[in-house]
Amino acid sequence: HLIRSKIHARSQYSFVPQPFAAKTETKSDRLRIGYFSADVHQHPVMVLLAKVLKMHDRNRFEIFFYGFSPKKSDPLRERIIAAVDVYDDVLQMRDIDIAHLARQDGIDIAIDLNGYTENSRSGIFAHRAAPVQISYLGYPGSMGADFIDYIVADKNLIPESSQVNYSEKPIYLPHHYQAQDNELPIDQAAPNRTELGLPENGFVFCALSNSYKITPAEFDLWMRLLKAVDGSVLWLLQGNTSVLKNLMFEAAKRGVDPARLVFATHTDHGQYLARFQRADLYLDTFIYNAGATASNALWAGLPVLTKRGHGYTARMAASLLSSIELPELITDSEQAYEALAIDLATNPVRMAAVKAKLVANRRTTPLFNTELFTRHLEEGYQQAYDRYSEGKAPDVIEVTTRV
Image (cartoon, one colour):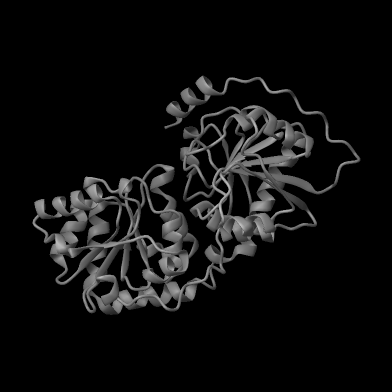
């Protein structure tokens, strides 16, 4: 991944940005943080980040947001705009002009919320929008670019032994890397199981991730689970017609009645969260974990079973489960994952105990403590800027629990 990213960065963004002048004494003592995104609408990154933007300490930070997504009538977009001090719609501007605008605004730290994703504008950062530039949340891996100094992480997500696979220096947060909103409303009038096409009494395995994350390895294992647990079903996210037909065909090939695959359609976010409460166990994908989806499931009270892998995308759910203090749901092999899934599905007492622990831990552990997370994130930003202001090169930053 790092090699591919480096090749892409060098081929597309070989600019030589102008150096930054020293910070003047007349400038505000507060650090100016600039967030940049193409996804200022109902999007997983914005759902996760919205409350953090609002909770930034305005005594220490000024929050700017540069949005380059098409305007939509969207409540989340309006929430983002209201949460920041300055919002600039820069969709029609060139990358270099956006970078110059950020420089004129005196941005100290630029946060790239896209990386190499759809509609991203990496050229802004290649032109150096700020003296310190950080990749966060939207892109799950290294950008391989010399213009991105840091990546926000935790040691479950990027172990110290994996730092060689990143061109960025990690800003290690003490509990988890992922922003959370602990006020997300869960619709109380969600459809019941029957209305959702689920069995009233059968065990519901749930995997509402995008279908591109499902590989034959997961699907083979999931079909074995259906065979092992009488009356169980697998609840999947309905994609296009081809995806639906292909998954049903593959189930039949493996000797499973396609009717045991139930497909969920897209709905509004409150209903989406409430639907998780109709399932029994979330089954994570291996190479590309559920990220925001896993957080949503946990927030709704649905346990998530994961297999921890080696790269960023294969360790996201383990980060979340560690922070919410449910390490018993983290496995390290397909065999352990399968055995635990069967045990939970056939042992109602153990399953109930795990669910009860999750519900209790939502309010007592760090994962959904948005204020604590925001303080840790801010401390990471501050330490990164302090290194720059002292003339030091970017280096690994470890935020402690004492901030």
